[in-house]
Image (cartoon, rainbow, N blue to C red; front, side, top):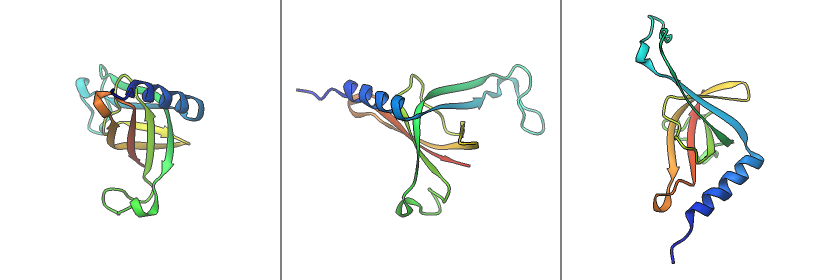
Length: 120
């Protein structure tokens, strides 16, 4: 008998909906190009991913100063239709963080949650 990971994903979504916060990840698509300052030119679209999640501090033992640095946050995000991408930005408690890594938890091909590393 196979384990029902879809039920686990639903439980994770319910917990994050009840106890998490709304998160909106954005990234400008450079289809319209950029000016000399890196600002999107007219015609540029914005990619957006939204979902419920929770921000956590990394444990001191996880901070190696290279891959994970002081101030990085770990986000646990519900399984959304589209996964956030590296370099997307997300505002959290008045600060804008950049996505450094996206690690899906996908046993048996079912996405249960995403764990993201974000940095100011």
